Length: 47
Image 1 (cartoon, rainbow, N blue to C red):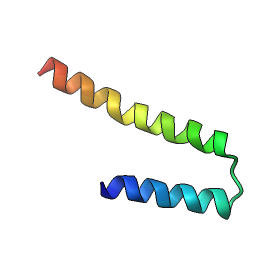
Image 2 (cartoon, rainbow, N blue to C red):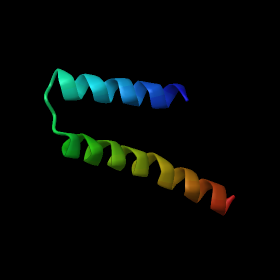
Image 3 (cartoon, rainbow, N blue to C red):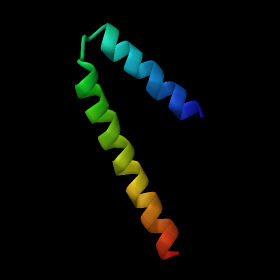
Image 4 (cartoon, rainbow, N blue to C red):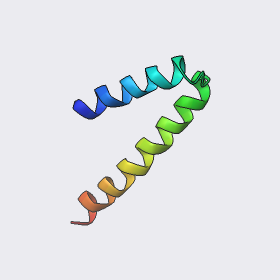
């Protein structure tokens, strides 16, 4: 849950201060989540 709050807070900062578009930010967050979830799924299914 702490990680979710950190990601939401960083998203707010990047969108307000650095003026990133929402589409670009969603692409970045989605790729990070996929990069973290796929190895976890592989480890859980193989073991």
